[in-house]
Amino acid sequence: MKSSLLGTLSTAFMALVFGFLGAAAWSYSGLADNRTRTFLLDNPDMLPQMAQAYQEQEAAKRLAGLGDEVYQPFPGAILGNPEGSKVLVEFTDYNCPYCEASLADVERLVAEDPDLKVVIREWPIFEGSDIASRMALAAASQGKYQAFHKAMFELGPASPESVEAAAIQAGLDLDRARADAASDAVTVELARNLTLAQSLGFGGTPAWVTSTKAVEGAIGFDGLKEALESSGNRADAATSS
Image (tube, helix red, strand yellow):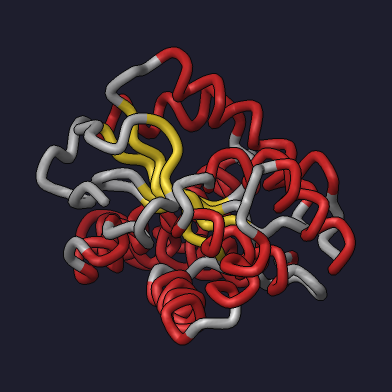
């Protein structure tokens, strides 16, 4: 993640530098690079802002190229209102501490907005979390995704023992859940989520998608709310399961 951020900062820095150079060349000629360098040295706090703006711009381009696929949930893997016109997509991992920390933010968003639909994309990237993601999708097939999702974060980290305990707490039919967790449908869904995350340029969890934005990290309740409010509704996305 650190190297990714440094790369983004470098790219954004070069983009701004060349932008300044191009805009100033007609009037300042050879002085443009010195003026740009002086400006950036005098305003180092702009670099993180530049990196964020560049990331958001590139993510928006990638998101536009995906169409509606990222909003289409695995049947049942939804929090909030299944019919909601406001859609938030979360890429999550049960062994990710930042995903666990974000759970309360998502629950608060759902509690405060009855029109919000949260599509969860299971993306097991931490060691040992695949078993939990599979059981979560099995829980979705039984209409008990939300119960398992919350129990798994409470009982984690993911292990065969904690996954079974979460499944029991969520009230799953264990024999059916074990079979569903090993099914081709679940394997295909996890592969699809990996492909979508890579297509969006995500490097880790949690990661979020609204109707117009794709952002990474535990950005908190206020960050998520702002992203949703600035994106508006997506009534035609994520058909009901």
